[in-house]
Length: 105
Ligand code: HEC
Image (spheres, rainbow, N blue to C red):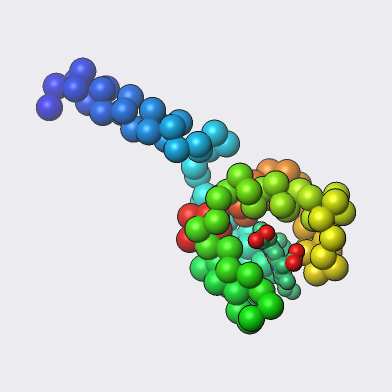
């Protein structure tokens, strides 16, 4: 494989990531630890599957949608007594990581 061919492949991979909307980055390392630390796993599991019938499955959901909802819970614009409390102390960066982590499950 020539060097220029390799660069073309890297370029294509980057372009594919850009096209699939990974604008905030695709690194989700630390996501599982944060989900455990923040307590999300109690209701949404480590795999994003609700642990009970009243807890929604969020695995595979769009990261952009979840990031938006998490910010709305935090601001109180979306009202749910459980979720409002869950995200109250989390930063934008943490909400973004959690959204991308669960989207990837
Ligand atoms: C005690 C249980 C519980 C915990 C802990 C919890 N959630 Fe939730 N989560 C819920 C419930 C119940 C809903 C549905 C709320 C509603 O109707 O708006 C929800 C909704 C959501 C939604 C929106 C789903 C949708 O379809 O709009 C997201 C995203 C989410 N949770 C992520 C998280 C994250 C990330 C954490 C950790 C910071 C977390 N949750 C912690 C119970 C929980």
